[in-house]
Length: 96
Image (cartoon, rainbow, N blue to C red; front, side):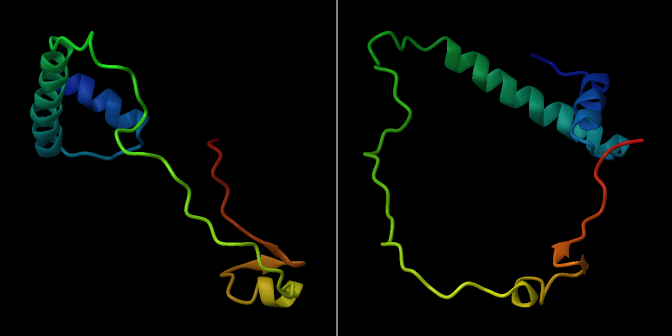
């Protein structure tokens, strides 16, 4: 599958990426190659392969819970770049 530069521009806009024309051409070529590999993988006969989420055995590596002293509100916000009334202040991420 060949991605057009227009398709790459749409993908970049959705991902909020600001690409120049050279990057658009490069990514169109690279993403097209990736899609070709996926197309080739779809041709592989995998009917005899059981579906799985992982080829390795799953196990969680967890430590035992340890009760410790709680931090004070001042300690919690001590390294915050911006805080007010013991709350972290962050920039708005909503669009206009």
